[in-house]
Length: 195
Image (cartoon, rainbow, N blue to C red):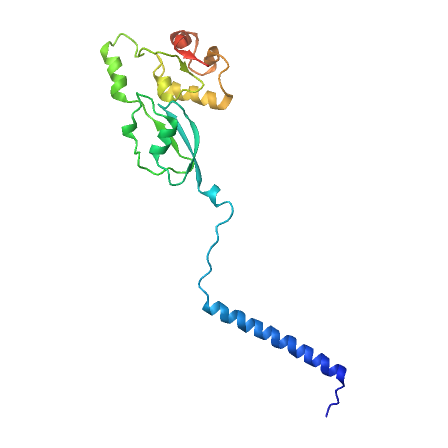
């Protein structure tokens, strides 16, 4: 038969040990996999960021703008931050609805209140007594619509102009909005401000 010297015996023993170790390791891993519970998903580090949503609130509110909320928040929470105006019709909104990322909440004007002013005297423009001027850099559509001669379409154009071109530097810059000429500006100039 074979004659194996000490050096060859040592090599054979090392190779056999490596093979046995590898086989034992694989069997142990397989056995562990059979007895383990399903792997648990570990939340990534940016988990908190994923839970945050962004909502745009506009219309009849004191503080229109973009707000960040947790996903569990409701429309009522958004209104609490934006502070509805007295003439806001919050009852027409579903205050219990969950907020969604990218959602826009437009708080409408209370139609009964606005019709009440116009119905009192049809000859008089529907402009209530104002303690302060309307800031055209911050006003929502509802506030802008309370200006004489400004309807929903013109209010949207004013807001669109402001979003595309930045804040108004002066009241007269409002004339750059399509539909507002000298005549319209004279009609609303006393009721607006940029400060």
